Length: 75
Image (cartoon, rainbow, N blue to C red; front, side):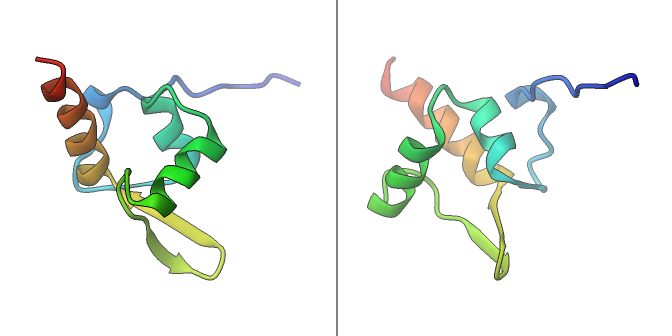
């Protein structure tokens, strides 16, 4: 059986009006799942949007702004 993989997301290919699930967020940032979730809980990272009891997403615009702020803090 042939398996297909989707290419890793880059900030340039993300629709800023869309929503991202956790695996998509983690493709954009060099951070692990537990570290990301701890940072969200502490308020260091963008807050998620709950779409249902088992569905959590992040606004792509929030993630892209967060990535931009990381670059701006090093300039």
